Length: 245
Image 1 (cartoon, rainbow, N blue to C red):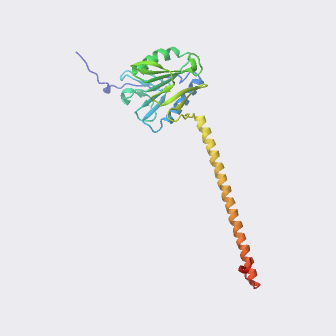
Image 2 (cartoon, one colour):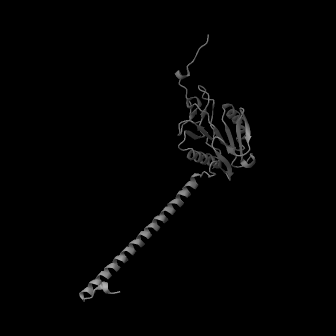
Image 3 (tube, rainbow, N blue to C red):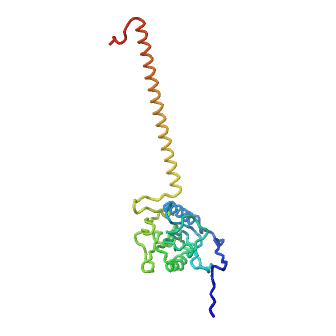
C-alpha cells in the first residue's frame, strides 16, 4: 500500500539561525558585509536580491538540507531581504555564490560546498581568501559548464556583468560595461562628503557673486543719484546740463 503525504498539510519549521557566528574573523566578516552592500547597491532597481549568511533551503520537507552561503545573488525574484531562502517557494536557485574562505573552512568550501552548488546548478561559485591562507592570489572562481564546475581564468562574472579583483583584504568589483569601480560604503561616504564640500563651495561662490552684483547695482544707483543731483543743481543755476560736453 502506498501512502501519499501532502507536505502542505504538515507544519515544518525552517529556522533562520543556528547560533553559529557569521564569520570566524573580523576580516572575513568585513569582506562579507562590504560585498553584500556593494552588490545590493549595484543591483538596486532590478528583479534580484543579495543575501548574506542566510540559510538556503533546497529540499522541501527536509529542513536539515540547507547551506548558508556567505553571499548569494539571485535574479528574477522579488528584491529585498529574507530571513531565509527556500528554492521551491522562490522558483530560482542563486546564480552566483561567494564564500569568504579560510584555512579552517578550506575542505568544506573546496569539496562539500563546491559539489553541492554544482548539483544545485549555481552558475558561478567564487572563493575569496582574504588572508591568503590557501588560495593563490586570494581568488578562485568556478563556472558551470555541462553541469561541471570549470575554473574561471579571467576573473569575470558573466551573470553579474562585473570583473572581480582583490585589493588587500577586500574583494572589489568593476563594471564590464563602463569600467567603473563599485564603491564600498566608506568610499561612498567620502564621495558624498566631497560632493557636499563642492556644493557648499559653489553655494558660497554664487553668494559671493550675488553680493558683488548687488554692490555693483548699488554703486551704479548711487552714481545715477549723484548725476541727477548735479544736473538739478546746474539747472538751478540756469545751466542746461545737456549742453555740457
